[in-house]
Image 1 (cartoon, rainbow, N blue to C red):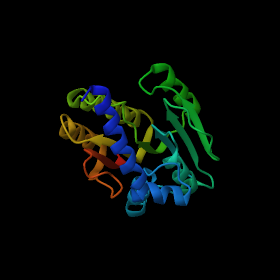
Image 2: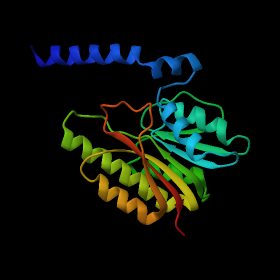
Image 3: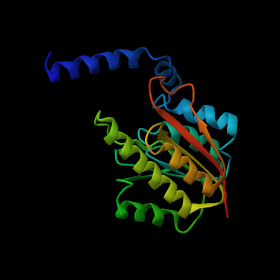
Image 4: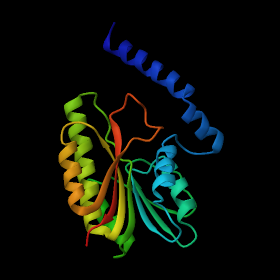
Amino acid sequence: MTQKSKRHKKSKVWMQAHVNDPWVQRAQAEGWRARAVFKLMEIDEKARLLKPGMTVVDLGAAPGSWCQYAAKRILPGGRLIALDLLEMDGLAGVEFIQGDFREDEVLARLEAALGGRQLDLVLSDMAPNMTGIAVTDQARVMHLTELSLEFAREHLKTGGDMLVKVFQGAGFMELRDETAKLFEAVQVKKPAASRDRSAETYLLARKKRG
């Protein structure tokens, strides 16, 4: 079997599993843009992360299901700024910046939008384009997570929270330890909507230290 036919077969299997996924079906039925919304929803319902009036940044926001949910939770009075490399259709109550979070110019645009205002919450569901090479993919994921942590260090108010996607693997324990230095409490969360076979997990960091 050629590499091309192998890829086609894998893609077909993934698509069948995706279409039959109960979380995908539920998201479509309820009008959410992606099944990922249920990961944020589960964590928020247990941890009470989102409240009216909050200022929130959502990193890696496209296609926008986290924004859909978060905007409803922080209004009235809240402000939500979303960022992604990919295009995202507009959403009421969401300010969107398109660009690569790893680039200084894009980060400057995000900082300009904040206008010096400190954040209550940083959300990050960012993930790089996967190559299928485990070592490379893990390094890219960890780099994005480290950038999210650095962004929280700079822009999150004292007492603020962060929820960030990370993958179990090389560098995970060190990252968790580094996060624990900045926040009073750090928990590892694996929501029910995360696929079992995925190494994806979330770090929930509460109460940034002063």
